[in-house]
Length: 289
Image (cartoon, rainbow, N blue to C red; front, top):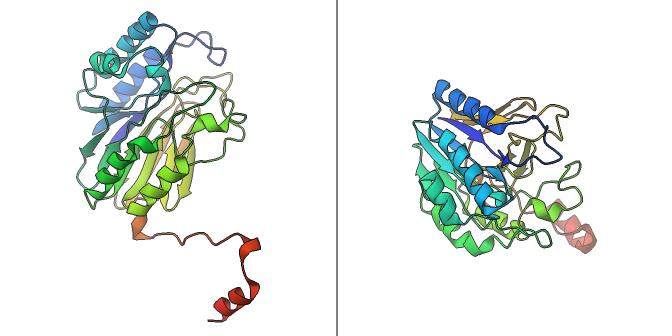
């Protein structure tokens, strides 16, 4: 199984972090061409298609992005990012892309892809709303089938460190959901998730939490890790023979190869209590047992 992945295209107005000569549309076309030439089974788009300004400009920019995606002849899975809904409604996005943006389950044979769409309507002061409002759907989806699941969201929920991140080192609460621990623990409790794919944070990372591998993919238009070059990043995910491989191409290359299995196949031990709350006598007896 081969999945071509792109995220954080941010087509539209140029920000101070972008190369002033950058045009994301040709790079997006190159990605679609590669997905076709690689014979990818599907294209997975992790959101933030545009850099928002006004409703009219966003609609135009989103339409230009969607038109290029439509050149891929196979299955496309899109999730929404926070910039996609700043001035456009979910219905606007659905009309432009010609498909639903609701949470969905895609049967891929030996495993399932779950595109989960909690709210991405972020504010500068607060960040994202709680994701747990949409958690029941996700847990029901995970428990409905015994095959390993790949979860796809725009916003990561690993809770991984943002030290060194241009955008989020000083505002880490904007990098994830405020209740990410609650969501993550509920997912881990099902034992069904194997891999969690996200964008949003504009860098490549892998974080294993509770035996779920959380992977974030670099932005197409970013350059804080590659200046003065633009990252021009996209990825190919391959899953076969009990392993998965993620290769990120462009100017911020990244490679990871790890086992692909449900977290419940080898569950982690529950974390021990804080050291200052452990009774030394009882602990000594436990160790002797």
